[in-house]
Image 1 (cartoon, rainbow, N blue to C red):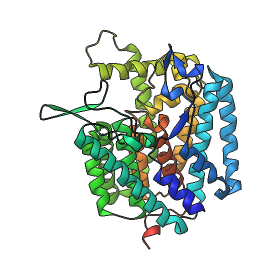
Image 2: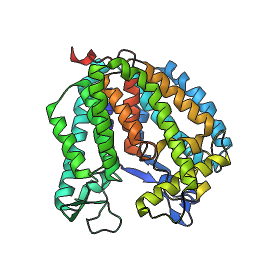
Image 3: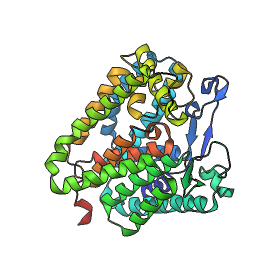
Image 4: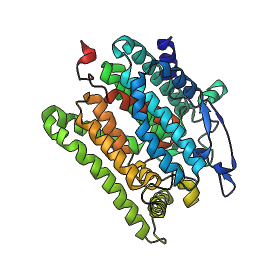
Length: 388
């Protein structure tokens, strides 16, 4: 039964089938904000079914988190909104604990086959969209695909030889989210078994999504991969430094954004990022210790988009205490001996988190991140364990 549940969960990992609720708290200036809508996903139910397979003693890990969650909700601008987001966080922690503790020697084939099939499926859907320059429709709507074409206002486009082309969305909310999911899934699969066809899927996915965010992350990961091959000690020393660097860089950008002139000549896309970063710092200044509460950025700033930086989101919504907790947990994780592909996936997540928010705000990326961190935290997970 465990294999069936696990296979189904990993196969459906990139889907968005859910029932959404729209309470008054999910509206900003009368407009629905997707990020504020409580939703129950099919994948949530599958995670719930995995609960009996988690070692009960591991659940003790959740109590310190619960204590901070209570404080964060108490001091939140809108406690009910923060409470629901914390429910999501605990769901992700449960998924991470499952992959931390499950018998991977027994479940290796299930994980590899399900995640591979999932990756192939979303790639084929994305490729078909790119070729047709529109979404496919039909039953794919229930997987998360929405109906639009390259002419739909607001659709993400790329320019190739002077022609505007729709970037591939597959079953995701944005091409960047799609690309991030593909890269991390690729690296997770590489940690189990090197499969040549995965390289083709990775390269083509980056081409059809045209995600500069993912491309920067990949170039950074490739650089680190070669550094690892030649000087693994240097990478080990860089681990904690990079966490500090990314947090400091994000905070510095936020401070700079508050001083940036409003009548600047930046393109609209970049202006929005500057405004949202400045809003994150202003939200932090409201409640600097415990933050304004998870998912309360929208209520405090009246923006309908989160900052395009995961560190600024953490900083504004959990304050100094929450940021320190995240820093200490990541530092402890990175001190362990981690499979090199999983380590590269973590670095990819960290650098793409400088420029986008999907790791914290979108269901599919949150789930694959939980799988990644659960696997990376395993004590026996070495570079050669699954190659024997």
